[in-house]
Each structure stands twice: as C-alpha cells, then as structure tokens.
Image (cartoon, rainbow over all chains, first blue to last red):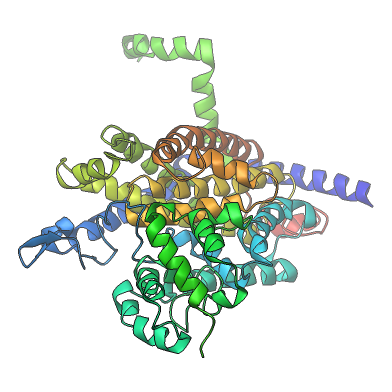
Length: 287
Length: 247
C-alpha cells in the first residue's frame, strides 16, 4: 500500500511538471508584477504605521509634554502607543510587564495553566508541542488530496487553532491592569480585613506591595491581575513560611522555588524586602 | 542590422565574462522565465510580501545599528537621539518597530495560505519544515529586539520572558543563563541580545530563506486546489485520468 502511494505521488508530481510546462505561464512578467504590487503595499503599510505612530503622539509628536512646568512623558500615548517609554529601572515596575502583542497568546497560556502544578505546560510544554506538530503536519497528512472541502479534519483543526490564537491574543490584550496609585488606597482596607493594622512594618510592606508592581501578576483580596497565573497571596501568611524564606524568595524566586518565572527583586534592598516579608507573613486571610 | 549588432556587442562583454565563470546569467534567466501554473492567484504573493518585510527589517536594522549603542547606560539615550534628532530617524525606527509586526503577521498568513492550499504535501515537506523554523526564528527576533530600547516595558517583559525560558526542563536554566549572560538580567544581557538579534538570528534567517526559495524554485508552486486546471491535479484520483476536460 505504501509502495502504491509512493509510486502514485511520484507520477502525480511528474504530471504536475508536464502540466506546468504545457499550460503554465512564465514567472516574469506575470507573477513578478503581482509580487511587486504586493511588496509595494507592504512597504506602504509599514511606512504608514511608522508615520501614524509618530504623528499622533501628543506634545508636537515628541511624546514630551509639560505638567506644571515639568517635562514629562505621562499620558503621551498616540494611536499606536508611546514613542518612548520610561528608561529601564530594575528597582520598580508600575505597570504590567507585557511582551509585544504577537506574544500575547503565549502569555495568555500562563493564565490557563496555573502556577505551580501545570505552569511548565503553559510556558514550554504547549509551545514546544505546537512547533513539533507543525513540523510533523506533512508526515501526519500524507494524502494527495488538497481541496479544502475534502480535508475536513485539517480545516476544522486549522480554524480552531486560528480562533483560539486570536481569542488568546485578544484576551491577553484586554487583560485588566491596575495602577499602583489606586492600589495604594486599598492598603487601609487590607490592613483592617486581614487584621494587621497594628503592625506598622506589615502596613509599610503592604504599601510597597501595592506600588512595586507585585499586583501585575498577583491577586490580593480581589485586587490585581492574574495575567501570568501567579499565585494569589491573600492567605500567603497562613502557610507560615517565615520572614527569612520570604526575603530569600523575593531576592531570587527561582533559587528558592525551582522553575519559578517570577522576576528577582533583590534590587529593592534588604530593608524593603523585610517589610514586604512582614506583610506577606501577616496576610493570614480575611478575619 | 549587422552593423548595429557589432556596435552593441562590446556592451555584452562583462555579462559574457560573468556568465562564463559563474553561470549566474543563465541562473537569473532560469529564475525569471521558469513556468509557473497558469492559475496561481493573489494569495500566493504572501511569500514575496513576507520576504519584502524581512528586507525592510534588514535595511532599517542596519541603519539603526549605525546609531544604536548596546550598553545599559547609552541604549535608551541613543534611541531617543535616533527618534528626536536624526533626519528621518523616527521613520527608520518606526518602520523597524512596526515592520516587525507586519513581518510576523505576514509569516503567519503565508503559513495559513500554504496550509489551506495543502501545499505542504509531497514533495514540498522540506519547504514547509524550513518555513516553520523561519517562523520560530522570526518570533525569536521579535523577543530579542524588544529589549533593545532598554525601557521599562522592555526590561520587565524580557525578565519574565527569560524566566519562562528558565522553566524548561533540563536545558531551561542554561538557556536562561546564556540569554542573560549571568545569574540575573544585567548590562551584559543587553549586548548579548543585541548580538543575537543582529548577527546570529538574521544570518540564520537569511540562510534559511535562501534554502526556502531554492526549494520553491526547484519544486515549483502549487495550483490553487479548487482550480479545475490544477497542474498535476489536486486530489487522490489518478493524474491525467480527466485529461480530456482540461483540453
């Protein structure tokens, strides 16, 4: 049977070559004209995007505006986003760490596969399997049939893949972000609910927690985003891991919890990390 | 007539010289005048469109490399300088920034077209595999290029990205350490990403595009599968069986 198939498809390819020779048209000028028109459109679209990016940026297209006499890049997003973000600062994040949009679907996988049990599936497992499956397609589908209506499995799979990638990209793009300043206002409520209002170190730690960007990945008493599937920390203290563990973990998460994708916060300094640890240990769940 | 011919003959000497030594002229002639199926359509220009987007990235990338400084202190100011001070610097940077998105969209669209047409089937399996590797390398270009402006978004997204690489079994930690150039993301990470982004990956991509194109030219492009005139047929039935209907 396999022998038949090989002979058959070789004959079919021979037929292809003779058909092209007999009824084909030369690449130049026909195909080349279409390719060139398409290529010019591509360059046009790229130039247009660059231009829209620049010319819709506030502050005379510079992305710098004056707030009370001080130059600032605050709120200077054009239609296609900011021209320049703030320079890299290993000490603070005040927004959700986001990849470029074409990685949103990968990032969204991290929401589906929750930390810690199945996170490896989301980070490495699924993408690797997808690439291997893509490579394997010609060997899984060995029929000569090419008409879409006669390849229902391939077409349904294709549509499902496109739909889910589109959906995950959309969900990744619209995932909720919270601002540090809004979260800061919630600290007294947290302190009261979790009963650490009388512990000044824990309260100071809670304020740091709100502004240092922790809540871009973690959820605390219903606030924050679970974009990356990081664990909820509302009852973190109930596990009694201890201040020492918390500080070491914040310094280098992957050293303490093998495989953790959480960034290292060593640059916050020992004093701040201790405050954060106090806060986490005091978070024993709503009373 | 013969007079005119001899008048222009010497103009052909360099071409003849080149052809005699390299066979290049014959190669170009073969490339231009090779036959393709008569029923190819607009969807089949997506490959050329992707190539164009790559060439835009290569060209604008070289221009940016002339002014960009890959160290933690000057990377951000050098990008500001390119955007704000240089003539059309904003355009070159903007084209590179948005060209990346266009390149990636076109790669996926091209891949979708090939899948829809069933063009990955015998004998074009290797062309498909090279294409899949190109998509992966293209995404890697996007990942490494994202860090280079050395701004907040770039820094923190890359931190998480590297940590994700680090979760891979066995090789993960080594990959993460290789990318970072150390235990943590640091100043060396930037120059490392720069080298990967503009030397390693583009060389691999350019080489594989060459192989991809060679295979496309060698094996020919497919007819749209629904075409009545499809060269070599488009189904499991015996080729040439319905020869009469083709005319």
